[in-house]
Image (cartoon, rainbow over all chains, first blue to last red; front, side):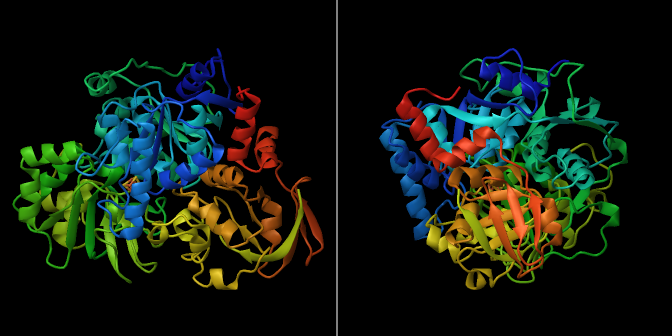
Amino acid sequence: MGMTITEKILAAHAGKDEVRAGELISIPVDMILGNDVTAPLAIQEFERIGVKTVFDPDKIALVPDHFTPNKDIKSAEQVKIMREFAQRHGITNYFEIGRMGIEHCLLPELGLVLPGDVVIGADSHTCTYGALGAFATGVGSTDMAAAMATGEAWFRVPATLRLIYYGKPRPWVSGKDLILHTIGRIGVDGARYMAMEFAGETVAGLSQDSRFTMANMAIEAGAKNGVFIPDAITDEYVKARARRSYKFYTSCADADYADIIEINVSEIEPQVAFPHLPENTRGISDVADVTIDQVVIGSCTNGRMEDLRVAASILAGRQVASHVRLIIFPGTQAIYREALREGLLDIFVAAGAAVSTPTCGPCLGGHMGVLAKGERALATTNRNFVGRMGHPESEVYLSSPAVAAASAIAGRITSPEAIMGKGCLG
Amino acid sequence: MRQLKGKIWVFGDDIDTDAIIPARHLNTSVPRELALHCMEDADPTFAEKVGEGDIIVAGSNFGCGSSREHAPIAIKAAKVACVIAESFARIFYRNAINIGLPILECPEAVREAKEGHEVAVDLARGLVSNVTLQRTYNAVAFPEFMQAIIGAGGLIDFVKEGLEEGSRHG
Ligand code: SF4
């Protein structure tokens, strides 16, 4: 019996010919990530261990992105803990505002996570890097602390759920719609403890940005990791960024899967997830009259160039509805600059949007667009839990950037087709 | 490990970490401050009502969502003795073990439990007893490796021991 890509990457790091689902292993990691919410706690725990130095100052990334630029004194103190730790230990990958980005947009962009890597991050959306054919998973602060000391982490090898996408996407259907549809189908714990392996002819044609979006939301189905088999599109993305060697792994044809689900993409409409779980998905034509107060485009899910371009294509020459606040936050400084160069930011501002510096901000109800009681937002983020973006009695709907941009113009949740007519894969 | 016994508070399925400790309170990691907001978006009065040694009983996928360790820390700091659920989300499960918050998967016990029942837990034997109903259930046992982490008092002490012995776990 052959192995899946997830098993192969884990076996290689364990120094074994083979590992199997269920096996417990302790293995070296290639990159450890923490942010301004999780790293201060990890630093406190790291200090309890009593070692003097981190295992490798080049293999730790510290990204203050959640409450930055700091929204209050408490959050400024949290970042100060990170900054001082980074200085004390000579952490090379510490990113100050002005040079930073949302962690899961930033690390791949800088080539800090590569195909074949094992990456842990004290942030649940660390699974994003599976889009490059890496094993990447979210852990807690204590795991991060232990790994900063030892360079290792323990895992139970996950079983794999294989998702095969086939058929031609309909107009305006993007990676976000595929993953929302998938979560709607298998549920928020449909892949609990498992690897989600995204395969099939449709994903083979998906852009790297759309793949990041899909892998990003694997955790929303409870998965340990999401993974794509790396290919020419992956290589195109990583070859200019990598500063160390990387390796492509692939699943064996006779690999052992916990389950295989086939999804006919040609039947999928643009999707919307209703409050308060990402699994409450509906096709856009089944969305009745839902008026909105705020639209948020960005985040580690949809804050990349492809996302901003599709939003700009819809917003160009149009106006955001008078009762709607549209907030757009690009994923990184590099994305921000590229959007500036392409004139996208001008389109957004002209349409009546607020464009933010890269930050997690509104995505977790932190700052830069928190919802009041009874308000309703449509967001391109990944979670619509109770109180996620503000008051516990506010509501969050999730969609692609195309649906979000169209809806900002209409003032209610609307299909891009209603604004634009037929388009192409976003 | 000690025997735990307490009054239970019942929650439903898919209680996420935003409900356990909302992000608006994440600009601190001080346990007693987090405890004041424990379970706030699932039950705003929970932090006032809960007593030392009480037990949380929940449905499936408890702790889904973000990786914030602040969630099990808030529960532990609110002096909750144990969480019993039908199932736990992966990162929450890992974090609870790593920080030493006792958790048990026991679907049968969850199904029959009602708010206010008294429940006793024997962690070493993996047994859950509903004192009110006078029924005992078998919970899912921890693998040996995790028992070793719990036995050491959490991951940090486990790693400390390992480093002191000079033999890294392989
Ligand atoms: S953008 Fe949102 S989901 Fe992504 S890392 Fe930030 S808070 Fe988490």
